[in-house]
Amino acid sequence: MVDLRTDVGALAFRNPLLLASGIWGESGQSLIGAYEAGAGAVVSKSIGAEPRPGYPNPTVEQYSDWGFLNAMGLPNPGIEAYPEEIRRARAGGVPIIGSIFAPTSQGFAELARAMEPTGVCAIELNLSCPHARGLGSEIGSDPAMVTEVTRTVKAATRLPVWAKLTPNVADPAALAVAAEVGGADAITAINTVRGLAIDPVLRRPVLAHGLGGLSGPAIKPIGLACVWLMYEQVRIPIVGVGGIRTARDVIDYTLAGARAVQVGTAVATDSISVFGRITSELERELAALGVERLTDLVGTAHHPPGAP
Ligand SMILES: Cc1cc2nc3c(=O)[nH]c(=O)nc-3n(C[C@H](O)[C@H](O)[C@H](O)COP(=O)(O)O)c2cc1C
Image 1 (cartoon, rainbow, N blue to C red):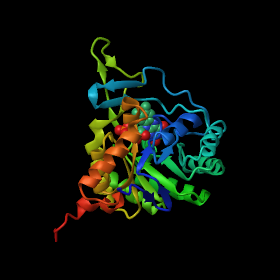
Image 2: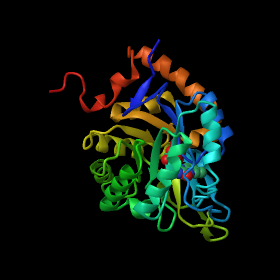
Image 3: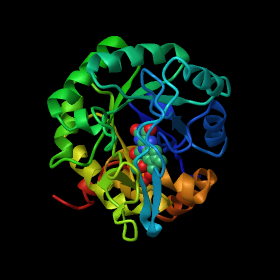
């Protein structure tokens, strides 16, 4: 039997497959559903200080077989209403990483403080949503801001802090270094890749917001490259995200340096049973490779056997 258990810093997970933020994690019941379907842990939907309706429809476009283009505009019920959902899922025994977004470092710190009593096991800073004005990657593209937000949140909470970073910059690894300097306990990489779909009949962008974020299989090589580059520059653990749909994808991210991964779009395209399917595939494929523990593989593509 292959050992799929892993850890991200001080946090231990029964397997490396975490539910990514925003795809399925709206209600406490859906978070429980993801855990029962086999996820190692779940990341809740990004929550801000106030309720936000998000952008008008259309907000999501299935972009051929390669993934989704979305510009949801961070719709969420706000921090006052949401902890109830987290408590419900915690009562079901689900390990939850609470995702938050804010326009300032103080705003992030206040949300982290409000999240702490709900029982989440870590905070994920959404520094990377590519389509929300004054939020997400608009602040998370600046390494100095990444350091400041991380440092301010670390001073406000005892929980581990994960910085979720954008690939939409020239040097994503510099953002990982900036988060590490700010005291982050882990990096999550990546959020969606900026993209556009156009309707030729209407002669305008398909999404109401115009630009959106691409997710799904198309972005796997981009996520993989980010994890690879970050692994060479930071010591803190990396959680890989982007286009993961099969055991092979998990193995590739692990070899590039990820200690855990998150699955987003594949939950929407393949159903929540994707966690159980990937877990069984992973056990079979690792056994065929003669690997006893998944964590033995972390980052090993950087040091091929026999290389000087
Ligand atoms: C419809 C949709 C909503 C998302 N909402 C969030 C969100 O609220 N917070 C966040 O950090 N990431 C959000 N993401 C990004 C995902 O968590 C993930 O980083 C990205 O989709 C890449 O992974 P994937 O290819 O497995 O989907 C969203 C993605 C999609 C497709």
